[in-house]
Image (cartoon, rainbow, N blue to C red; front, side, top):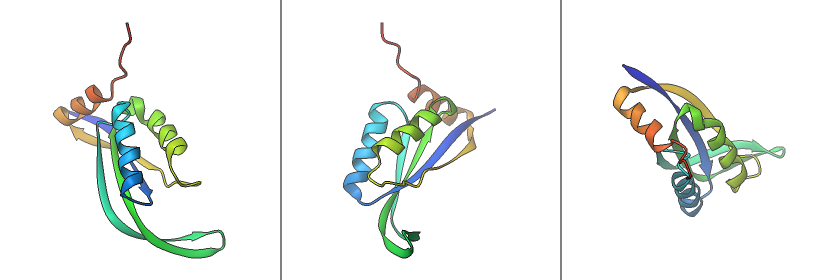
Amino acid sequence: MTLNVTLMLTTVPDEDAAEKLSSTALEAHLAACVTRLGPVHSQYHWQGRIESGDEVQLLFKTSLARAAELEQFIQTQHPYDTPEILSWQVTASNAYGQWVNAETHRPIHV
């Protein structure tokens, strides 16, 4: 048996921004895990010019139920004006999918 989870990728300018964004998302249970991929070197069009620079990629693993909320969180907390936010659904092993769902389950306040 397998379960679907969401992977969400973004890039940030440095390790400090990576730590802040990933830690805050984990504390809010918006992601079960965040993997830092990088540093990476990016080249891109920006305001009529070709730019380049070193960045850190972050790969978030979250449940389907929390994906939209995680995207909104990244959008509002990201240091860039136009952050890269890419997401896709993947098939995970049953055990891993259950773990992601459990870790991103919204806490119930009594």
